[in-house]
Image (cartoon, rainbow, N blue to C red; front, top):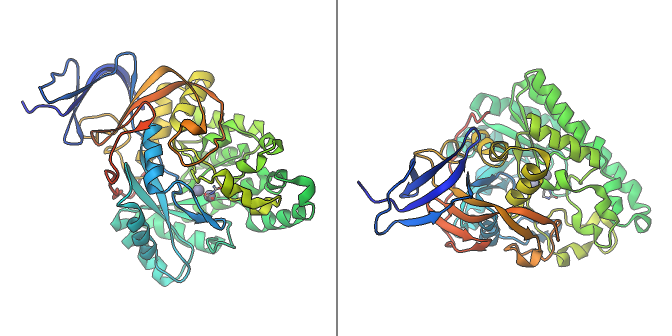
Length: 463
Ligand code: URP
Ligand code: ZN
Ligand code: ZN
């Protein structure tokens, strides 16, 4: 028998459907056996996991590494962002190639790959963000899907960035991808009402400070856009994925649409589950500005309910790191805050402590939300998202007893602040393995730059 490269011994294996104790054997980047009492050879690396969970690696399908945005560039680049991911138990990320108006989608993909390929430390994919629609774009959809990018993104806001897609574009993209097996992710907010509200509150920006950001982005601006996008999915038969859903009303709309048979899925993020807009009243309230905005405690509660009952199928982070120095550009004007926060490094342990530890999420539901469902919806299953013979050896040995107080200073991210600074966690990744290689140990990166590969994903992802 050929010697195994790696054995994870005696761990409690958790998949979306099962929990049991066994050893996991790895050879040449793949899981080759899941069985009792696997035998190590002289060269086999053995990781003892008694008393620990073995999860499939986390998959964060929503990150923006080194993104030029808000007049600056997000502070975690493809190297450090993927190191941070590994430290937090994430073994796959999906970033975005954003089409420039007047240029092809493939140009954006090639440019983004040139930035990412030499730097990534774990596997990664790209979504294609469509910002311009014409005959060439339409023809390109098939080429992009054949290239291995079956998931597209459209922004219903961001006119100034040149990213905004109007309803006609969204409708056409849903029609086109319905035929070819792609899906359309939407950033759903009502552009024109937002613009009006931003102008309204900006007139008194000194009075409102950072709180003006949240006043100008009430829940109904997201809810209306979600309902509108769902309507376009319903009439076209296209598959829709609501990214970073922040509202309880959005979860209600997704629930109702699914009951009617609309092909819609939804993602939320830890910040929408765990923070509310009171954070804007603090001295450093501006740091928390994201887009869409964190909402109210009742939104937090409805989104948790959505994770438990299946209305919301994916947890991702929308990582878009800006340091306090970058955020300082706001200078008292809420319209100038760079939107975004760090997240990929803390998603898995936060969701374990807050979801499994406090809110009744089972470990299997956790694995479904952070790994299996994203793998299925985004065309990577069963290579990713599960622990099975033949799957990539992307694994996390997770210590459910480990107590950690989150401190930005202790994290790998380039961010000097954390939205969860001082939060007390029980449960933390001890070892992260990417295609058979140990890439992080006890929160420290130990892998190799460039180890990650670009993932060619398959169309027709569904749950
Ligand atoms: O605030 C955020 N989310 N920044 C990144 C861009 C986006 O809308 O996802
Ligand atoms: Zn967005
Ligand atoms: Zn985003």
